[in-house]
Length: 381
Ligand code: NAD
Image (tube, rainbow, N blue to C red; front, side, top):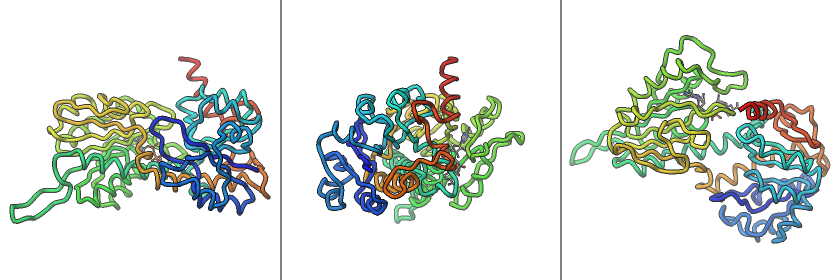
């Protein structure tokens, strides 16, 4: 069987789905890998590196597509690429299935069995395949560097002959994978860090990183679903969070916002008034821009200024660290492929508790109840 990797086409994308280390691993599973010429260049991988690992390298994109048993990608490929795939072939990528379910229709038409990286369950068994966590780790780290670079002060406390420089104050909203990495990175740079999350369980993790966890009385409501994700909150509960955030943002130099609820618009955690209440020169890095942003004035993909406060909303920060982002993604992809390949052949077990929930289209139909529900709610709008 043949696994194909193409050059990514999304603007600004620098990552590649498989790196040479994974090509060797897949050879051990009797799967051949074919790579489009220059696919790894932005991630520091030359065609010769792929060849040395045993991959075929070709610049015949269409031929690669039509010969693929599995297309391994970072982003959802363009419709014209999907149309060149064999009927019944498989695709694994970030597909945005809950945010853009209608975009999956070419996969149905081509009868492609598609797996969404986003829907791989966050279970212990699937940990090695958890690309969301891999990318969120990079994004949380990089967001702090962006904030530190932009803010007109230093992060660490310094005692110099010219006097003491106080440490920067960082506020992190949402303490999931990206938020925790942001806390750890800001702490390593010497900042004093406060963090807020609706999930009480996040408190212990925040404190273990040396940050202060901000508690908000939400009246004992259930804030976490069975999968460990945050639930969508009532307007009243959201408002309590916003009030507390506005108070603490006043003294922050950098605010990093990461709050998300899968398949929903990102919760609004900072109003325009809260932004106006911040010190001149302070910086907000809103990591939820792709799902609407956590800050009222966020302009996804852009950096704006309001009353001396900079609000950044980068959309694909993982792509700014292409070497490690590709390496981690490739390992996640290979671990998932290992579940699908038996004796050098594709053997898709739809009773498997990792394979089934991540499959979004199969045999010309939608295979996932969450995606079907997202489509229905779209139709109802
Ligand atoms: P995410 O990207 O969906 O959301 C980021 C954070 O925002 C979450 O911590 C969430 O609780 C928080 N949030 C949502 N609404 C909020 C609001 N109104 N105010 C403040 N915070 C809000 O989350 P994620 O980083 O993908 O992680 C989701 C969960 O999965 C976490 O519990 C994480 O620990 C868990 N997880 C488990 C594993 C595993 O066991 N294998 C791996 C990764 C993540």
